[in-house]
Image (cartoon, rainbow, N blue to C red):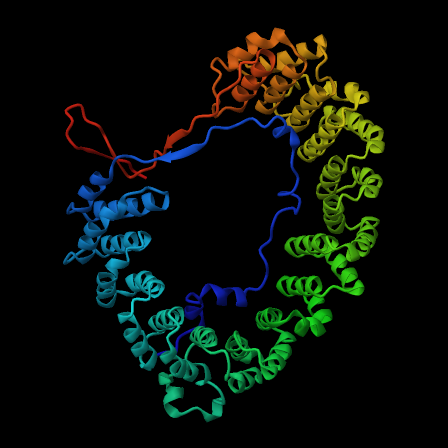
Length: 628
């Protein structure tokens, strides 16, 4: 019986269908999170030792556990082998035969059998396909759900006959039918096309009054929506032509109940590109259901973005973010002056991914000489506005384009009321590096430092990042007039090491560039105090970032008196995992010429293995059970 509650079928929707039914894009953090950088962490570029994962010499132990009578040990052993493979352990091919034996063991516990099957699939043990196939056919649905997708990836041909039989049998349970449809689609089995078409079309034209007595009694063979959509998706993969009539019939149902049919219509045309198919897709692009419209417009763009251009206004006005994202794609692929204007408008889109995509699209368009001026004109229009989303994105855009005339407006935006804007503006000023802005930047930093020292600002973490960018700007430009502005950041705040650590570290780094090559005893003394601020008790050591930059700046000041302290925190001139150690080593090399050798590889053993060797003193093999 294929008639089930819709709720039960939704669980079994394929990932692509879930996307079509849930078209909203994932919400991301601020667009600038992955863009804003800090050169102080790259100048100097302190080498870090490469770290590789070490593995326990426990393969034989895992195989011993796999052969134990306890089902939980067998399960854990198989799980551990799979985990070791995912983490990169080599030489696990020798575990395949024991895993197959565990899989085929008579009266094997279902959980242990499932774990053995999962391990074999993880190892990509294609030679175990016959055993996996046999066990999947004789076991429950859970094992089939695991094994059959792997058999499809491997194109294990004996499985095709079983899947075709299920597809043709009206009594196949829905979940097993979906597995068969997916498997046949993965291997592109042409014989499935006819039965798939029957599934897709089986509910058409069956109004309530026309249903048979058996159908009303619940014995209908009408498939669930999930099955229809799976069948349509797979049939669309198998056929690149000839499904226009079926798609037309399915698309004709514009009622709310026709959602499944219209989704199926769009899926059937996944590889079609005839004029008739294009007309159907263009009609579906205007569908009220975002999932239908998204699938249709995606296909049109794949054929030719021009085909979706007539729907631009409609797509841009849709509340669904996926559809607006497709509109951005069309604007980018088919740019005109008017479309560049529309694209710039998307910089203020409500969804972060859409506006970030618009920003990247405008950047890429501006790489063309004939378009750059128009992009900058539209961008400066947005920059003059007050919408925070647009201001964040346009700051990123104009900074990417190195448009230095924007710097004056960015100085104004330092006082904007949203961190997405004022932090990004600081980053933009640093990247544009317009010297005419430095007096205003220094004045702003000085005022903010005094205000933040007064305490009580809940947004201090954002101002920390903003001031870090501005302090780095003052340093990279060697702006000597900022010396008095930066020095107040050096002393430790009485409240602890976490007061503006980024801004303080940036100030220490910047002062090193401003005074590079020149001795400054008072500054060296202040920085040496920061490096040595490691009390054993409260309040604890100063922030690691500040101590790192203090070491670097002491070297730039040629502070020979700091050598003893530098050697204290880097007793051996070898690169290690500690940033302060490495900064001190770099400083020692600058002051003495004692160059640090290339970093050695560090091997780290993860402690979370289920079974590890206990290394007994008598040399016999034993194991230690690491409980999770």
